[in-house]
Image (cartoon, each protein chain N blue to C red):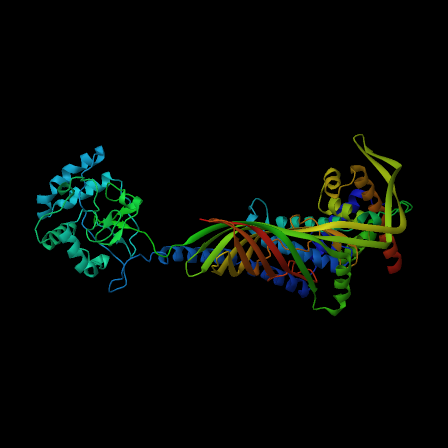
Length: 489
Length: 150
């Protein structure tokens, strides 16, 4: 009895469908190793690094710049304090605000003046500053000569820790007592009434003078007509503070572009593969590479600076290979038989004829590697008359990496690769970690804000760009010459 | 699963590669398993897809040999029943790539010719003819084994 096709298929399915063979232990070792490698690479150290950097920048921005002008107090905190004095202005808003202040003389003594101040300052749109140390409280009342004299003697004593500030009422009482004439100086005591800074007799002050800071005010500073404006900020203890800093951060934004010269190394621990590495080096050569980016930086007067931004690099290599033993196979299908299994099921028996020709085949391709990076840099910049020079170092976090091209495989056959398309041969990673970066920056000053920048740099790739399953480690170190413009704010 | 890989692979090393690659996919995508079918079926499907992908990676067209000269031979049922699973597996692995792929997918996995044609990027009629030729060749191989045993 002849076995028909259905029975043949059924027997194979029965016997092989659930048939199991024990896999060699080496296969499981490979699986375990590859999974373990992948898991270990998944630690989000890129984001940990980026987070640390951002926190450092924020911490520096919050604490370093607030070193205020003026003499230092005993605890090194620069605080100048003054009474919150009402103003009498023609501004309707000020007129509205006069009523609470009009009641202040009496109410203040009774300890109720604070409510009036709060109402008034709320009307002035005061902004509460952060409660850091180092706030400057500026005099808002017109001072008499006696007050000015008093302030000369007590200027040191007036610089005190903000935590020791007395209540506004107590301050006013203190000032009233300090005046020999006992006269209470308010804006109403002066004809102009609207200005809370007076000129100091005996000093050649050419403009409005701040009795407590003992300096001529700028036009802008003197122009304010209401407390807590023009850079002064209302705080919860009803004082007005200036956050003016004597050591501010300078921010800058730069744009750059330039050639890059990546040097490649192909290494292997297997001596038998050194020939393969040589073959790859022979068939792939540097073509051209370039990078561009934008970078924001903040610099302190000390010269320390931090920078970050975005960077894009594209490297191109030429693949050139002549296969002298190439075979081109053409397949031709010919229907040689027709089997009618049922009225609706016909099987055509097709003869497959393959014709193979031997010859020389020339492969040419441009291989590209594209990097999209987040630079995290720290540096030191020296100011010059015409040019600044800085030394920078840090890391480039490779956020994206794309590779596309053609190389020789270990069996010396050309293969195409693309790390975004896993159906092709997998050679390159998509996550390549970070590179170390160091550079020297030259900033030629074009005018008050603009610099021409020239930055030679070196970038060293920490990890190979190739997968651990690929027999060679492919790494790069690149030399870069970036040129561009920088705008200093 | 290793037996499945052996069925699709040309040799043991290739089967191990498929097994490794397949299991790495399984572990990496375990979270995407939706519990709609059996885990075994899901793993099995991944292994088959890996094997098919491995087949695509090779220049398989070179291996479409003109084997139409193999005559269709009659076969006694007892002849195939006498063979063990391992021997049948060896016979399948002796098939040329194209025959082996179609035979495995159609006979063991239960794919339709239309599906096989789409997956392997061949014509549906080619899939049918490959199956016919695979059966003919298997009959011949079984006969050969039988004659050796006798």
